[in-house]
Amino acid sequence: MAARTTMFQTASDAKTEIAAAENDMAMAQTIPDAQLRQARLESADKHIQVAENLQALGQPDLQKGTSVLLQAEQIQSQLEAGNKKLCYPGTMEEIQAAVRDMRNIDRYMRDQITAAKNRRGTVPANPGANNPYQPPVTTQPTTTQPTTTQPTTNQPAVPGVLDVNNPNSIRQYLDKQLAAVPNKPADARVSGVSASTFEIAFSDAEEQYGLVYLPQVKAVADWLVTELKRGDLVRQGLKEQYITIVADLRDANVNIPTQVKYRSEFGNPFFATYRLNGQDQVLEVPGNSVLTRGSLAVTKAYNLKRYFASQLGLPESAIQIDMRAPAPGTAAAQTTKIVVGYKK
Image (cartoon, rainbow, N blue to C red; front, side, top):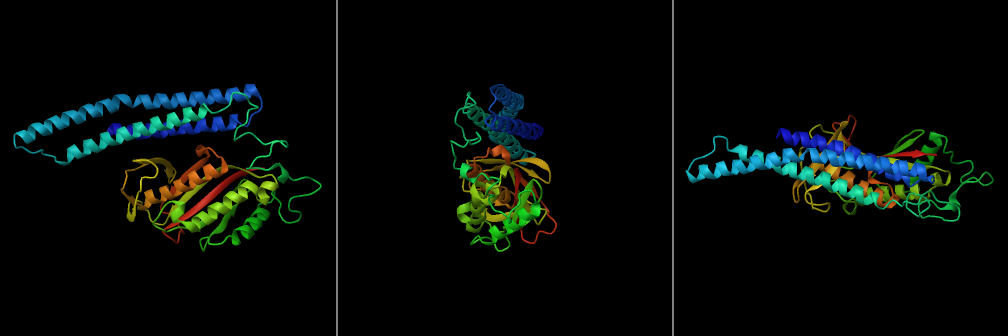
């Protein structure tokens, strides 16, 4: 069980390395200079190698745990053959659970490393090659940022209405646009704007996950994607850099069971990385298991993460999940916040 704890930390460290590699790969595809581009890709390779080394560190513990489990099973069989019982009947279950967790963590790290390697292989060696992260040029408009939307000094995108250098102006614009979204959560609101971020918040106490089951949440997500693809903010030069999906829970106990079960859409078991009150965590959810308030919140956020990554072309490493419990002032069981970091 001590080895299991160590492997959880190792998985968290490996996740950090993979996130750094993803960032390097994303940045490389925006760099036209071949030498600088290659330096970024070499940095990504180093981060992936560190993640592989971390995964390898857990192999001796995993092998030892497997050996201990086999010995325990042999002892149990011998006792049962002699009509005897274990003095501590829960010990066997604890060993089995620890080894199962270690195997799952090891598989999780392998999958993350393999996915990063596969993405690394898709980065074109030629900096001029077409790729989803390459900045568009005037002769090659893209669906994510049409060249016709670039503002000019002669014809501002929204003269006298929107000033992207003024957070108050951005807030007024977002307030107006969000107010026009139909079927959104009743309290959906712009909860914060700064010189580099804006934040959308809404109550989300529904015991469901998946945007198909949460049409009001999807209405907000669809609107936000539209704004970040072709809204007036984009026309005046704003570009999203990262997204943080925050789940604020009213209660401190995140392990309270809910009425919903995990439907195995994301693999069995399902793994997700997130932060709880500032600490890195790895969520494991077996198939058909009952979700707790905490695991339900993370699963909701993971759905949004996948949606934004697919719609906006962001690497998943640029979309983080952050859970806070308890969150003072949270009226509903859960308040979801979507924080968009942007640059001009």
